[in-house]
Length: 280
Length: 310
Image (cartoon, rainbow over all chains, first blue to last red; front, side, top):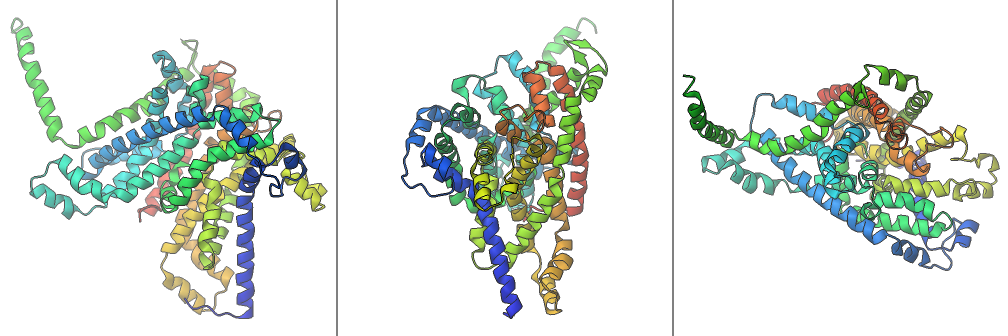
C-alpha cells in the first residue's frame, strides 16, 4: 500500500496515534487503578489513588485470600470445567447430526436453535428455580451445571454445525466408501479437522460460565457452594472499609482470565467475534 | 380376536422394540442429536411452557390476565422498562465508537497489535469485577473525581452513582466502556477481509481519510454493523442485570434510578416472593426480545454467510 507522506498525511498519522493512545488509556485505567490500589494501604489509596504504590504491600492479598477465595475458586473451577466439557461433547455430537445428514425439519430445528440464542437467561430463571426446588436440587452443582449446558447448547451447536458443513464432502465420502461407520468418520475424519473451532468454542464457553452471575446467585444459595462471581459480589460490602483488600480480591478474580487472554488471544478474538450472539 | 390380543401384544412388543432400535441405529442423525436435544427441550421448552402457565395463575388457581394487568400497571415495572429503553440510546453511540476505533486500528501499522489488545481488554473482564472497581472509582471522593478536581474541573466532578439523575447514565457509560471493544474487533475483522482494490481505487481517485471511510468502507460494513446493533440492543434490554446488581447491592438504587426489567423480575421472585408476577414480567420481556429475534433473522438472511464464517 503506497501512502504519501505529505505534511498533512503526517499530521493525520500523529493525530490517529494520539487518539488511539487516548482510547488505550481509557481502556486500561480501571485495571491500573485496580492493580495499584491492591498494593497500597488504605490511607495511601485515599490520598493519591492515581500514584504508583510507593510502599507496595500484600496485606490486601493475604486478607482476600484468607477469606473464602480458595473455596470460591474451587467451585467456579468445578462448575466451569464440567459444564463446558459436557457442552462440547453434546454439541459436537448434535452438530454432526445436523451437518452430516439431511433430514426433514432440520432447517426448522436449526432456525429455532438460532432464535433460542437470544432468549435472556432471566426469562428461564423462575421456571427453572421452581423445577430445581421440586427436585430438591437447589444449592447443588448439578442443577447449575445442567442449566448452563442447556443455555450454551444452542450457540455451540450452531457454531459447530456451520463448521462441520464446510468440511469437504469428498473427505467423508471417501471414508464411507472404505466402509467406515458414522462414528468412525466422525472420530477419525471430522474431529481431527475441527481443532480450531473446538478451541474457540471452549474459550467462549469458559468465559461465559466463569463470568456468569445471575444463575449462580439464584441456584447456589449456601455459602460454601458460591462461585467466584457470586463471592466477589458480596465481598465488596464486607470489606467496604478496606479498598486495597477489595482491589486485591478483584485482581485475584481477574488473574486467570488475564493469563488465558494473554496466551490465547488469537482464539479469544476469533472466538468472540464468532461468538457474537452470546451478548455477554 | 379379542382373546388373542394379549398374547399378540406380548409377542410383538419386543419385536417392535427391536425394529425401533434397528431404525434408530440406521437412522443416524437422531441418535447424535438426541442428548443435546433433550437438554435444550428441558431447559428452554419446559421453561417457556411453565412460564406461560405460571403467568396465568396465582397460588395455583387460574386468574386469566390479572397478573398482566397487575404488572403492566405497576409503576416500578414501567420505570424498569423505561430504563431499559433509555439504555438503548447507548447502542448508536456504541456502533459509532466501534466503527471509529476499527477504522483507526485498520489505518495504523505501528503498534496496532498493542492497541487492539488494549481496546479489547475491557470486554474480557468479568462484569462483577468491572462493577466493583467502577463502583470504587466513581465515589463522590473517588479516583475519578479527585483527578477532575486536580485538573480544576470541579464542575465535572459529579456524584456519578449517588445522584438519581446521574446513575443510569453512568451505568450506560460503563456498559459502553465494556462493549466497545467487542464491536471494534468485530468490525475490524470484517474490515481486514474486505477486498483492498476498492479502497485503493478510491484512494488513487483522491478520496481523503474521511471521505474514503464514510463513502467506501462504511457501506460495505453495513451488515456487520447492523448485526452488532441488534446484538447490543439485546444486551441493553436483557443483559444488564449484572452491572445493576453489583453496583447497587441488588437494589437498583439510588431510589429506583437504576431498576431495570431483569432486576424487577429477580426482586419480584426472590425478595417480594411473588413468582407469578415475576413470571408474567419475564414473559413480557421474552415477547420484547422476540422483536429483536425477528430483526436478527432478517440480518442473517441478508448476510447469507454471516459475519463469522471465514
